[in-house]
Length: 480
Image (spheres, helix red, strand yellow):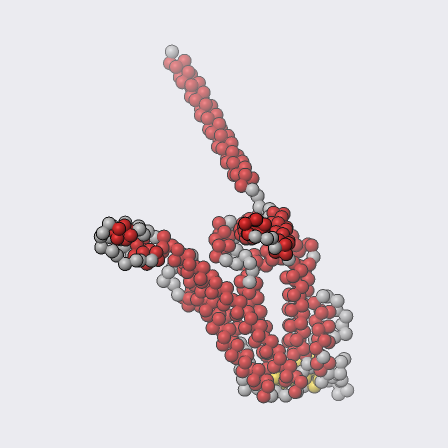
């Protein structure tokens, strides 16, 4: 340490007592800063990489936090834009017009939310690139566009699609139903008495779509739900990603977080997802089908048709007639009927079970969180016990019985919380002794295999030696 720096806080006092030059009183924080600025300390920090490593860890944590916020807000903004699009189409259906002042105002808000969404996506990829740089996955000189430009461009196209303000009109559609005979008495009629027309000796279903109907393609933004689920999961952190890397598990995969959440709280995950898919599908089917069959102008009729299709009940009293409605309901039926409903069946539970490595990663994360909560509960228990003892001490004057009762009640609550933590300790991973036994067993088996190979080699050498000795004896016998 630099001798010019005053290390002891009592040095100035001793100088004053011995008659030396009195120095001004320096506070502890100022003295500490002077020590840090000494040449020897500066040299120590310049030769040691600890500060740089800590800065890298800090930047990595900051970028993980930023990416989490960008992904959560991107999904929220995407949902807001989707809801506004549905509301705007609802306004046009009620008004039976291609444009209204309210619909234009809603489209303006949708455009603003779309611009915000695109900015959030770009910021998310910038944080994602910084994380990869800090983890040495990509070179430090790489840029966001040079690495992720194809995926980024695709996401910007998908999330940027919307119907801009003041773009209104209608698109007439003739949907082919069947060909007509050359007979003049041929009838072109729909069983539900929908509007039909004859064109080029064929029967067509006639309807028209407003340009705003094509805003239903904004539903593709729901792919952001996977990132939202990962970012809102309690397992999301750079430390979890590091533990997953040690176990060869992608702990940042949305499917890993889906399985982890589903393994603990399946109902809280599946029920809202099923309700969301049902009602959003009903709203979009209603937009696509009302121009052809006005009976679906009642929203709950569309909900009933969607529910009957997704659950495979299929009464057939209502069915989509347009190609767009049929295609979208088919996709929703696959998503809701074959996937979401299958999640509640036991045959699908086995496919979602965590692997051994994934279970260990989850166990380590849960165990760390449990230890932290247990320590906090223990601190509260000790504090409450100390306050109670202080309250009962004779030197503190007369006892406040009400305070004693409150502290006693709080003490029992803290004890109950501690018992709960002890009973709820995670026990889903193999112990260290079990893992060591497995490693030692595999090592012993490998050594046994090596021993057998060595014995086989020695046996072949002995056989060749015996044959060589026999050949030598034959040669000596023939020469005598």
